[in-house]
Image (tube, rainbow, N blue to C red):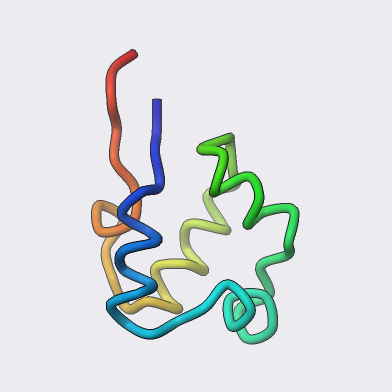
Length: 66
């Protein structure tokens, strides 16, 4: 299972809100909801998040075996 707990910590550390992700990065509110629920998202969304936060994938997502 992929979890996005690190995403919220990275956003807080960099002072980026979900509003900024929606408005400046083109990530819609449904995708934000999916991230909060650790549901499937597209790789292009991961790319947008890494660009917005200037980070690596492992800084925002983590694999946890079920």
